[in-house]
Image (cartoon, rainbow, N blue to C red; front, side, top):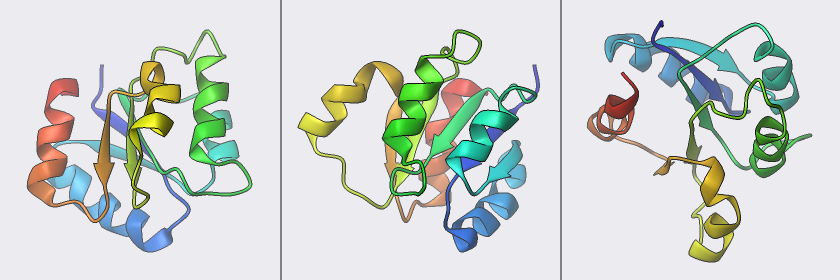
Amino acid sequence: MSRKVMVIDDDLPTLEVMKLLLPRLGWEPIMVNNALEALEMLEKEQPRLILLDIMMSPLNGWEFLKRLRGNPAMKDIPVLLFTAKHIWPEEFSLYADGVVGVLEKPVLPSDLRRALEPFA
């Protein structure tokens, strides 16, 4: 299995940074700036992991996660929340079954490396 990671974020500067950083950490990034497009791409791509922003439109990260987990072909892909929004425990508990962790932006390369290690 390849070391593909799908980054879903509507912030283009974030995508550009991740596009440069992930290969240096040994990952092949798939960059997507729209959660609806990401759902379509997942029909063809099989990433090991998804880095998911929460605050996006037209489909936010929570809605994306709900759709992802509702699709038997995609429901087992690990999702790491990658967001500038602080996730409160009450909010996280609603989706805890669907995510493997949370990285708050901005993230240091060393923290990103550590978060990705279990999926390498």
